[in-house]
Length: 268
Length: 261
Image 1 (cartoon, rainbow over the protein chains, first blue to last red):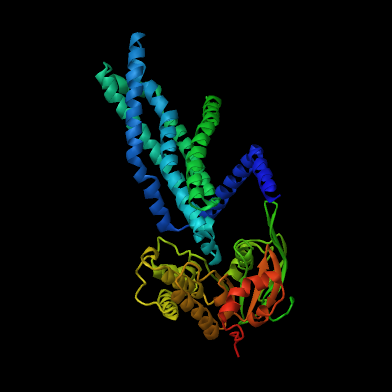
Image 2 (image 1 turned 45 degrees about the horizontal axis):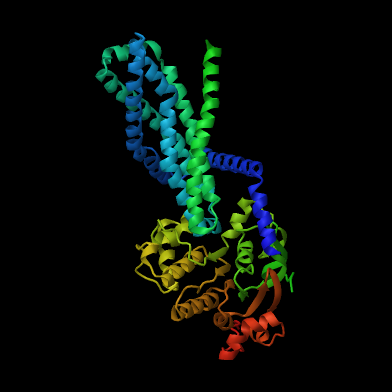
């Protein structure tokens, strides 16, 4: 009887993805909103925020630089070949720069921070939940949102533009070296960037990174706070945090691209 | 049984249902000021859930819980936080903050709630650690302490904000008998010295009979009975008898409840 009920509940849970998705969205927004309210009211620990900024931003830079330089170099390798064939090698620099400023820089930074820091946030908070440290906070009248979420939210949102900026420069730097090796001089490459890209392209990409930072912090904190069932639960929270962050970054990137390009068309 | 105006804790008709599963069903009892009441029952009977409801960490689906005359069910988080400061919670596995030293753990509630000056906090932490017979461990991290020491630090942390009510979740589980008895003695000593009201979740029948003024037996989320250890030993209910039989057989001093004079 009891087993039958448990099985029915399990089937019920499995068969109701819409309900689960709505709960996830509601929870994540609530975590983000409450965290943002704590930040707005100044209820955020400065020392912990700085520690998180170092962990989320500065410590992520090496992998962001490594992936962005590689991606920029590969992109330049393919594009110089194709564009030279059509006599359009003078456009190589501008094309790659626009690709990085508008798309690849923010996306690579977002995915790397989600994989590295999002996982760490979910695992740390999840472990605190299953070892009752979060209950201990609440029992001492300390809000887990103010104590745990607010510093991570502020650090993610503040540091993600820096990560995006570094990704942009690293990617473009890598592509300059590769393009030079394949017959497009650095001066031609730079002239092309000056001709095709503008400061607003950089800003549009950085706006995206702000959203990605908010997404990573809210989802990772939410997954951590909802952790259940011991070590396996922490593992699940960590994995699901990375998967959800990466998927949400790509989906929201699609809408942000439309929104930001729409805004620039309207302003012209 | 409930509704006594001078009760430190009054639990009235409390039920807790989660995912269609009834964890607690219509629980009613009082805890008098300065009393040590044990919640006993098998694993999964709902003892810890009830303790967390009393501590304001879980919200009952039905019923009221009054702490010092104030109903905490349905309270806003901000108001509940003021009540929480008068309740100390000692967790099953101590739940110490593993990234903080012993000093910072014990000082945590005071620092976060800005309840004292820096010098005062230092004095209180030293005193509370001395109360639980721990000295010279302020700079150690929880991972450097034994299980018994961690539980003592957990108790010192709970005592730091001068609570009127102390809630213990299986304070002796996982400890050797000697350390377990030392923790039991500490619970009684703390009550005798500070006059705090204590609710202790345990299924250690010997400890329950040694330290409790009264004990409540919970089975499948229902309250079977609340009585003195001596009264429980004489109870007719088969589940209570089954629970008490090993202790009766070994002749634990059930007829000497530790009620304060």
